Amino acid sequence: MSPEVWKTIAIVAYLALMLGIGYAAFRRTDDLDDYMLGGRRLSPGAAALSAGASDMSGWLLMGLPGAIYVSGLVESWIAIGLTIGAWLNWKFVAPRLRAYTETAHNSITIPSFFENRLHDTSRLLRVASGAIILVFFTFYVSSGMVAGGTFFEGSFGLDYTTGIWVVGGVTLAYTLFGGFLGATWTDVAQGCLMLLALVAVPVVAFFDLGGWGPIREGLLAAETSGAVNHLSFLAGASVTGVVSAAAWGLGYFGQPHIIVRFMAIRSPQDAVAGRRIGISWMIVTAVGAIVTGLIGVAYVNVHGGTLENPETVFLYLSQVLFHPLVAGLVLAAVLAAIMSTISSQLIVSSSALVEDLVKITGKEMTARVQVMLGRLGVLLVAVIAGLIAFDRTDTILDLVGFAWAGFGAAFGPIVILSLYWRRLTRWGALAGMVVGAAVAFGWGRSPLGDTLYEIVPGFVLGGIVAIVVSLLTPAPSEAVREEFAEAARCASEQDAVKA
Image 1 (spheres, rainbow, N blue to C red):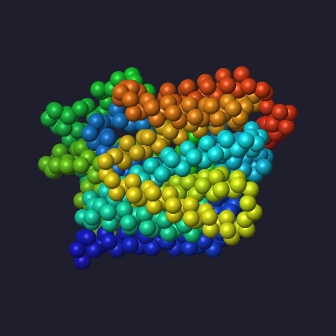
Image 2: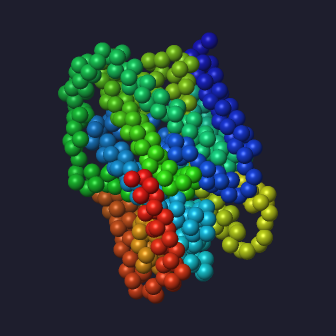
Image 3: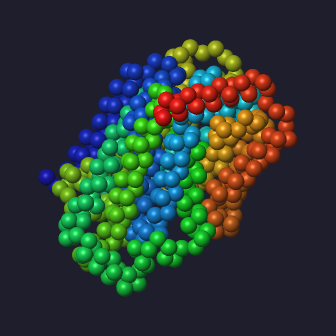
């Protein structure tokens, strides 16, 4: 059989597996709590792998190796910042958010948590945060579909639009029916596949080239031919450039599709095991992606080839080093990274539409109707995102950077203050959220965005405004303070148990 046939077999088998997992999750979904949060019964391993897979997307297997291939280790500051941010998120946000969301009237979404945490009877906080989620996630989902179309276009020669239909259709199917559990279980499988691929490709390439010596010679040859110093973390970097790259880690505190995994774990104690598993997975995969980019430079120079699109270096190595069937499975890992992120974002978008914007009307709905509305929300966001993806005027990185900064600046400071500051008021939270989102949006589309990543001023100013407005408005009620004390007590007890 031809290499294309072997690769197609691997991809079809992978897609069939995802649909099968989605069907199994469908059989376990009975009500909206199951559909949106999996009944709060995720194991730490499932939560960690799901958070990692839904976080990294195709950037980990295509964007990062490609950036390293072009510019060297100076591009690894994004990975370093993300790893630190993820560790801090698991350490300080995960256990307390899991405890507090249950204390705050069993909140199952981030907007409902904000409303319940601050006893906001005006519903403004919930509506504003739900609207922010819908806007930014529509663009985020669109970036995944763009990546999917590009993947099939570059790997199989299919039309870009056909690639969008395949990725969007399969992801929509298992998310539409499987809900949160479907997205999470497929994330676990996809996370394992990504891990295996990012270990196998650089290891096999390392031995194929004959070890570090030939690799170093290849890197030096690339350098002498006019390329940058690939082994330097600072070559060609500026202070603001390094800060901007590392500041991607700030975004973790406000990403709804990641922190919702913290709300779904079985108990706050599970956050410890989740952190260890999640950060270990993240370090191994990030190192694998970085090494793949470096080895790719040496491999191309040693063999005298060319690579027109640096972001395909991972795909290139997999196809020249492995049997076509194995190469197809490696390609499936790229597809897994793309689809895992889309599915997680669709679920959170659906929850924002149904739980945070429809249910606040006060109409009584049966569990079946609520789940049906959740599925309609998934379909609506997917359709709009697909329409945006058909217009290729924006790059994948542009769309991802826009959404990541928006969420990080709008929600990050409010999540932290909600969990650790008793004096936060609903008006402070609302003002900080709006200012953070507005600054990130405006800064990124001005000339200032070329000097400093917009998440930095958005996060800082959003936090400052939230604190100042809270101090200028009436203090929270006694009920809010008692609830905060109860959540803090639960967190302290969990810390004592862990010790």
